[in-house]
Image: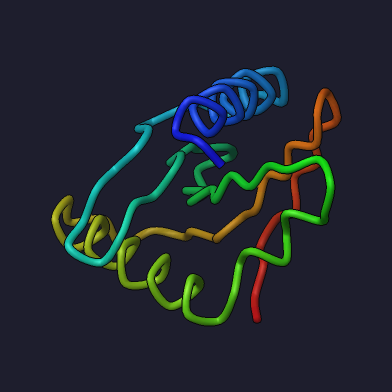
Length: 108
């Protein structure tokens, strides 16, 4: 997928989260281990959101065990850099055309 399509999906995802009462803290946070698409907060819990999009397949399958490892290392880097010791979870936000689905607290 092109970076432009990815940016469009991430913009839709951010708007979707805001409609669901999430506060966007940061977008496209880069670490030595990878990128966190969206960092948001709701009810004092940090949500590290991986945005996946596609139309001819199920985008959730692009979150592999290796990708999940990178996400976890990246979020640990973020928490350490910012001295954060509160609750958090990893979520997936799937964008298929105009349909968006938030899957909270994913694990593999």
